[in-house]
Amino acid sequence: MKKAFTMLELVMVIVVIGILAAVAIPRTGRDNVAEAATQLISHIRYAQHLALVDDKFDSTVANWYENIWQIRFTGNTYSIVSNDNTNFAQDAMNNGTNMQDIDLNDDYGVTIAFSGSCGANTIIGFDHVGRPILGDLSGTGSAYVAGNLMVANCVIGVSDGTTDINITIRPETGYASIQ
Image (cartoon, rainbow, N blue to C red; front, side, top):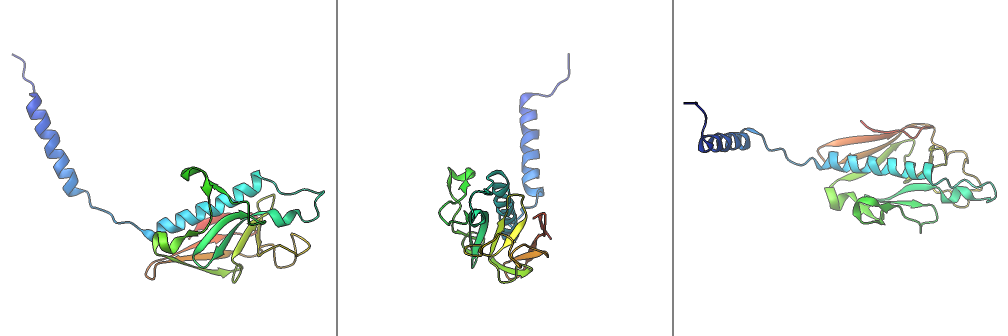
């Protein structure tokens, strides 16, 4: 006679293992600051990606630079838009809705603050080769007016009052990382 486990014994072992796993695995809470920082850095990279693939440079148009892709902040809200303010990026994860007025305070309960080279600039654009440009270029006469091309790290702080995470955008390459 062969010795084997019965189906009932196998089911009981699986149930006991399941109960132990449910009790033993610690429940982790949401980290809203990390989630908000991850979303924001993803959208900054997306704006740079759009600038690279949707090249707005046109040597026949004098003010081509006014249509570069950028991320515009107003308080804790931001939008990804071409500089004409009518061409919003489409959210592929949300049926192509406009990436407009995304509020980090409503969604995650966090605030954002700028420091480093972005300082008071709440508009970060990217030229046709992905270089970060600060401020609104409308009426400047050139894409590379002194002070517009980022020359030092731009730091965006994301905070819920107790936890702080900094996002750093580097000059020349536009590389964004979480610190």
